[in-house]
Length: 221
Image 1 (cartoon, rainbow, N blue to C red):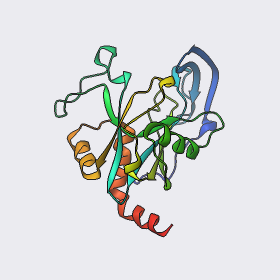
Image 2 (cartoon, helix red, strand yellow; image 1 turned 120 degrees about the horizontal axis):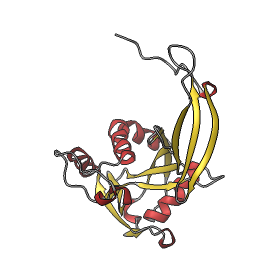
Image 3 (cartoon, rainbow, N blue to C red; image 1 turned 120 degrees about the vertical axis):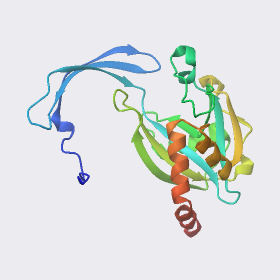
């Protein structure tokens, strides 16, 4: 059996970008890049033209109440899940999709802002919560084939009874319903396919795998 490599063979220095041109600037920015890269068999690739979408980077927070064993979930509209705008039908084994998704607290990282600051800000703006403990979980590229966005996930210890009923900023066209949900119910919805956005799936699975270790850490702090 082939062993997994401990690190990538190539790095940033093994890509040559000849041109990098912005072709659209709105809520997202779209670039056209002309580039080439080194090949595993040796030498360089041909010059390749690729479109790259730059929407910035984001922070996601899982608000968890360890005393009540519950999670604060958000429900809000997402344009990328509207069928007539290109969203695909879901797999036949899953429940019918809705453009209103069950998600976690999340927000974009502004220039010069730390990820921890984003986590605290969004907890308050979207759910009316304050973190008693805040732990970094992991980060990942959401769709590296053409999107620059990297998402960092945090988990926050919160008092679920202090959560607001609704959240979000009207100036950002946010309309959020806030719900406290038993952890077991959230995991059941995940298993049934109701929760299907990547950051929420990853965060909930991480909590299931690491809950005991996390609770021990929080008790010692």
